[in-house]
Image (cartoon, rainbow, N blue to C red; front, side, top):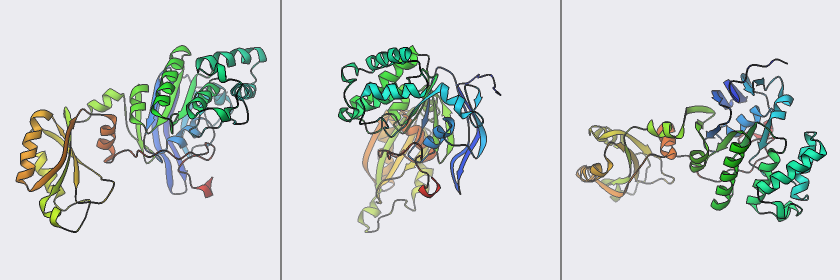
Length: 358
């Protein structure tokens, strides 16, 4: 079997996946170091699920190459699957079986010897806190319990790489944190590489050492969480919502006003302003939402308040904050990441793929 030296747990070079005219994955290239947690961060439909389906051998790329543990995924998908675990975003544990039975069936799929799989099942059930519920039907489990069971199932054969597609989608905040702690423990104790897709900013920030921001099938930027935040100009960000006094009296509502370019140009003229971007509002209105990147937020606010008034704007809201991954996403894509709950999909079909194409 042809195999390259696995300098990286995952290596992707110029990867493309086309569905007709749609580029679900558009010339992606990156490497994931062994033992790290790599995050693919982006909105629903960005191409994250398609990427995992390629890397787990479910579909072939249209062009480009990908290696998992140094093995070409297109040529040897069945060998790659022995080294990886996959947890899809839609829960797939069998509701009519117990937790123990779900794990046992999956271990049998990997031809694990009976004594070894029995020991591994007991160990995992204890680790995920389900020993007392191991012989109850999964139909009686909560969402958080099912998700923990699915993570244990993905680890039953001791893979070296775990792919997680939106692992905490639909969970309450407490259950999400339990899953985060569980993943951090497994990664440390089992020398595991984690490849995570998410559209939750806090999840990526807490778990990942490297993050690729993905939008429309492309890697927009890749860095550590801190590196991404430092790339944003200025020390602070001022979020402000304003409205021109002429527009307050007008019955015509519009999101992008004729004078926005002039306003941005004027703001950029201040020495303490490093950058200005307009945020898109969810509903059409005469309000203008801006993010102003400044070097001294506290001193800048009163200056800007006075200046907006001089220019004929009414300030509706204004706030000061440190840069977050949400701000990074806005800075690089010009829009806020969509916060809606992701669609529960069949992992074998995938999200964002036209059904007629399967």
